[in-house]
Image 1 (tube, rainbow, N blue to C red):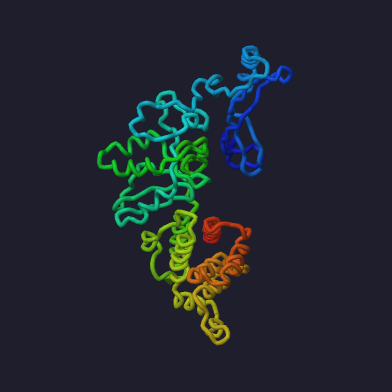
Image 2 (cartoon, rainbow, N blue to C red):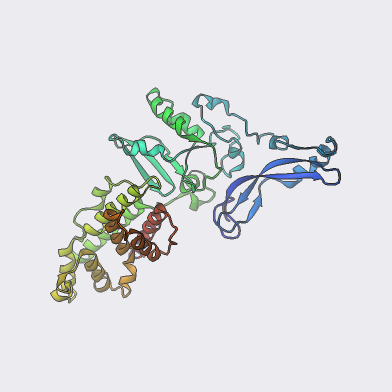
Amino acid sequence: MPHPLQCSTCHEYRVIEYEPVKFEDSERQKGFIVDIPFYCCLSCKRRGTILPRSRFMEQKEMLLRELRNGEYFDLPLKNFFSKLDSERRFEKFDHLEFQYDPRDYYIIPGLYRDWDDGYLTPVFFEKSLLLHYNNHPEYTVKFTSFSSCNIYHNGEPMFEWGMGVNRGGRLFKWLGDLERDFRDDKRKPDLRRFQASNIPSDHDVASKFYLGQNPFSEEDAFQESDNESKLFELINSFNSEMKERFGEEISKVKIGHLSGYYKSPIMEERGQVFSSFLSLNKYLIENLQEQSLKKILRQKGLTESEFQKGGKNLGSLKLFALFIRHALKKENADDIVAPLFVLNDLRQLHGHLSDSSFDSRYSSCKERLGLANSATDLEVFTTLVSNLVLFYQSFSV
């Protein structure tokens, strides 16, 4: 059974959008307009109703009778559904001084609770809020997936449950969690920082954070990472398996020791994204142990001449491709290892962001990832990481 937020046609998660709907008596040119929430699929563009049409139709004739001919006016949604009042406040959280849309609590599936009014109301923040913490020597920001993260202070999580990242790039936390997280007076500076970054709701909570905290099914309850955290986990498993299988360490340093220093890109800012490409290249490609790869390949019958091309020694990435073909017996090794070659090319572009050749070389990388030339830097990053995850998963099947 699909999640209530999922589109029945394409199964993408839908957003909630409010649109004005006119109820009128066209002959007498009178009526009223109500902003009504709809489920809207960003993928196939299908729309679906959330509230029962019958409630509006029951009151339509009565309301129209009260209007004079030629009269139109806007009618608040709360006239039909008393709880759906955009001005409503959950008073026990007023001291936090956050803005939010209380209708989210009642309309977004899985948030409403009879016994705890307003706790799971989403409160939204600008993603740039994370830059302060990511650039502070005592803090780090860790993304457990592309759509969930937490802030760490001296290695300890700042929030018990972290926060979500929606498809619009906005952060969100539950109103009740915010009250608990900022209860300590020592957190007042952080509270003020969050207040300053507080923005209006866009009614979109679709994320691993939302699904994991409000599971509709058993599958929802166990959300796996899909970003660099998953990638580092897979690389560790892969390296351990290669050590057991061939008796050689093919990585110079364990990824676990390196990943603690890694910073994911936060904003759509080229310097951040390409800095992450540089780090990933260091961990995934430069960390490969060339001598161990050659030793294994010699055992598989390769000669020294096959470690060279045009009189030059092959680099670690091309040796790794040979390892995949001859040691792991993957005939399509060049296709399999393609995401690593794209990563290597993006790393080379890091030092040439202002060169005249940058655009054409970057376009080539996008094309090889199956992206349009209009793809943003963050879209290139997330697509590459997803492909790298698939690359390492292919060895664990």
